[in-house]
Length: 433
Image (cartoon, rainbow, N blue to C red; front, side):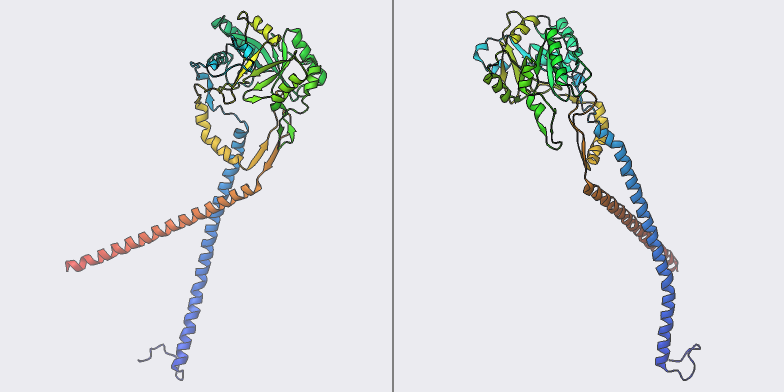
């Protein structure tokens, strides 16, 4: 092979020539490699910037959603059901499967619910609806006891007198509610307040004054759901109603009786106390404590000589009552439908539930005086929040990788199409020839 005009000077061997060519090629490759590395570094910075931007957008969205959705979750009530459309056109007859605890009252003619709430406090049914609901549940007498107001009882009484005179009796009352005691004040016509503004934590004297004021109106004072009131809220470490008076103290203050059945809970210790102390003057009541439609578990039964509020009150005051009790409850009738507001907010509520999984909030019992009986405790789950950040970063990286992959696929497809088009164009003149 002849040497080219660009061959090395004479005296240079072929091996030296090859070595020189290799060195020259290496220098040229290194010169070309530097721009390529610089280009890769620039691309890495671009991709990293895009990923960082996506992470920032996702984190900002997560913070904004948290700020928006936590209040929705904490409101605790977005009106899931539309109770206003419910029609209680079914009936329950507990006498078909239950007998009175005391056989002496087997000829009862009054089935009484001694504890119920309406929309005038924290119930879901209007006073009028509550009357219809009680009739459907097999009651023909009802004590309406909204929290700290007698207004619901008076409204329900007017409705029953107008529509069910002689067939259904409403006894107005209220549930004196705070952080020490929940006490039904039965057969009153005006809201009873304490002697001073004790608010959520009334003194012993103030509770005694409420009992005396109730008696002055011709009413009865009944202590409600002691098991519920004294149950320890484990995470908070306190009873639901701190400082609840003892049964002995309540008797000394002149209480008339106790609610021994509340919903499906039977207060056996209190009933045993009444029997052990020969407290024949103490009365017992049962109550559904209904806030929203559901099952009925107990009916206070008695025999009134005439079907009037006054006659029923005389039998209650004399202690001539018994009860029907079924811890499984009756079969509920109509179920409420979802409200339009709930259906509109349900997706947001679901997202709020997810955000709320990052913390636990233990709220104390509401005092019905604008406060809570215990201080709230909030436990934040830092590990869950850390995992959320990791998920966001992973999603941003995968999104960018998917974008780059799609871009490369599109680029390769375009090159293939151009090459194919060029080949077909070059082949056309040859075919013509």
